[in-house]
Structures are given as C-alpha cells and as structure tokens.
Length: 206
Image (cartoon, rainbow, N blue to C red; front, side, top):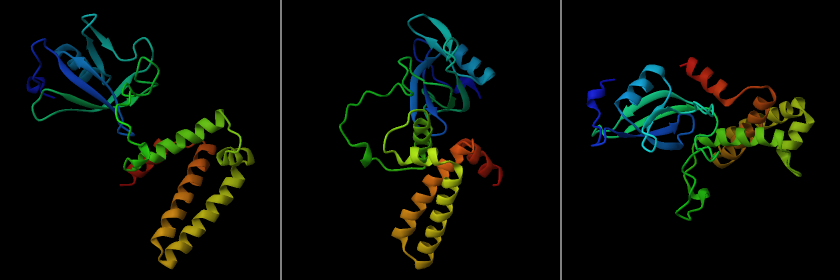
C-alpha cells in the first residue's frame, strides 16, 4: 500500500473504521497517524493513535481483544480507512461486541433485510444455550438428547426439503430448508465444528 495516497488531516490523522470480516458489523472507529498505519501494515494487527494520550496503541495490547487485519482499504478521497478484521473478544471497552450499540432510531430490527449473517447469529445462540440453558428451549432439548437425536432430525428435515422441492413449492422449500439449516447448525456445534470451519472448506473447494 502506498501511504502517500492517504490524506491525513491537519493533525496528521485519518479515521479508521474496523468491520467484523465475518458478519459485516461495524465494530469501532478510531484514528491513525502515519506511524500507526505503517505499524498496522507491518504487523497485520490494528494499531491506532490515541488523541487523548498522544501515543500509539495496539488494539488489545492490554485486554487481549486484538484485531487481526484481513483487508485494509481507503475511500475514493483517501481520507478514510476501512479495515475488515478478525476480532478477538469484544471490540468496545465497555465489553460490548461493537462500540455502536446506542440506538437512535426505533426501527424494529425484524424489519432489517436478512442475510447469511443470521447463520452466525443462530450458531452463537446455540452455543449460548449450551452454557446457559433456558427452560422450554427446543435447542436445549436437542442438546440434552444428544447427537443421535440431532442426526435423526437432520435426516428428517433433509427428506422434507427434498419432498417440497419435488412438489415444486417455493414456500415449502423455504420453510423446510430453514429447518434443515437450523438442525445442521446444532449438529455442527455438537460435533465441535464452527461456521468458520465450514466457510473455509467451501472456499477451498472453489
């Protein structure tokens, strides 16, 4: 990367946005100067410049909540940086995953367009249910019954998805495919397989 393409402001700084590479969630915004940007590029881990302390700080240096930089881009004007990172632990000093948790609008999140990120969210819920069981939870029911029960459900849902497809019903295929994906996520968790493991395998096959 040619750092000369970056337009630092009058204080010698440029805003840097960190985005979760897996989910696309914006994690935080901080500032970089020329030295911290170069250090980020050299080490592969996000290093920022603290305006209050007037010194460099490597993200997670004391907390362990590091940001491994997978990609770094700058905008069309060269005055802002966007990094896709692999976040270890929460990004925010408050303990929140993202610094952007203060809601201003009152739009129901159910109205947001759904994306493949829901698979990550569902897997996280399954993992949470395993450590913090909830009464009446179907996920906990499957986890308690064990992997054989989940395997049976995956087989049933796969068969029902096939039947729906043969019937030519888009609505039924959608419903059954969702059931199949959910049960497959539970099976993955019980087998010690993460979503990242599967994404990497799919990428390897391209």
